[in-house]
Image 1 (cartoon, rainbow over the protein chains, first blue to last red):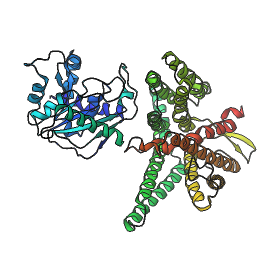
Image 2 (tube, rainbow over the protein chains, first blue to last red):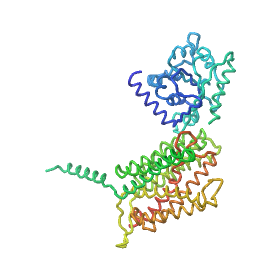
Image 3 (cartoon, chains in turn yellow, cyan):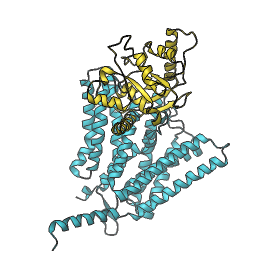
Image 4 (cartoon, one colour):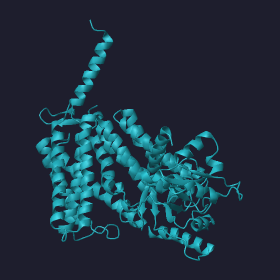
Length: 206
Length: 355
């Protein structure tokens, strides 16, 4: 990252914090530089940026939100901004064995980076938590050392709802829960449901 | 020979410097006394906490300390206003208004269809109201300031929600947004608008009205002091003599005894303050009545906001989003007192009265 990107990165983080008025609550976990996968509910375009900017500065530098290449890779400005918040661009359409998103993620994070993923796959139309896609399961299986952190993002769908361009600066809340891991011999559906429940539980705890 | 333009600039600069240094000794003195009192109370509370940490409820001290810090901030800012001009205070209140409205709308459920209306409210009406407050000293602009939100704002909000095309709970949604705008922005903007009032006072010696040429921050200082005094006095009256609650389902401690006691004590305090220092342009009895009115409005504000909180099932606006101080909890009283104080002052002592 060069100097101008570092500056833009800091400005982006502050803007996102001001706009979302986000309070960050760590429930059963602490900020740490170990490798993690933050998985959150997805209701707004702002989700990735706000969650990323809610992390402490040192963690922001080593945390990469997974974003759609068809949106963030289009055009120089978006590519530049995506580079500033460390986005890991994944092509949603061109998925093949040779070009598997999972392999890209595993390759890109190496032994230092953490990830922010939205296992629902796309923004929820109703605000309710949808079923999780299987990527999280395979990630946990290939890299059992990663801490899987459930995150619940509250009120962001009111700040920038689906289909709106202009945000309304209400207050929001980011709750980060205790890490989970894949159990020995746990099935895919079983694990994904447990992960989904861990996010729902944070919602109810508020 | 000095060119004409030079002299003009020189006098302008000299004038500006003179204004900047025209320190109002009385206001600064009173401010320092209040700040010193508050700080010593804060220190004393902390000492108490350390000394008797097992017998004093730490939560109560924490709440009390937070309140004192909020009050100190306001007084320090008022002090700065005297040096830096009214624009500093105006910007401070704009920030407070904006944050209070965020809390209010966050707490009030709105629908997807209200999104664009809210965008207008936050980014057009809020700044515009404060820009107009800065020009409210001018008689023509004063009218714009006074009607922007009650007339243009409320009509616009209802129309914009209708244009958004969702009929469900139309009146309820309109009322919620209008009320938030009215309390958090419109009412509060009258506090800094006090700094732009053009006033006269009754000179008893000559028996006629004269222009009142003191620093306007005195009025704001008087308002804030009375609101907080009323808060404090109610607390003690309710604790000591509170028998008949005003409305138990709305507020668990506010009593009729507290209401009357605080209003009378505030009136007495205002009377003594005015008699000793001549801080406001009112007569001594006028100041006493103002003190009572402010106290009554402060209680009304607390009760109203408490009713909304009870309806939404939250105890403090601050707990909506944990970690935030809850700006709306601090300003409910001043929101109700400010517009009434402003308009009474302007009605009786506005420069236009003398003609």
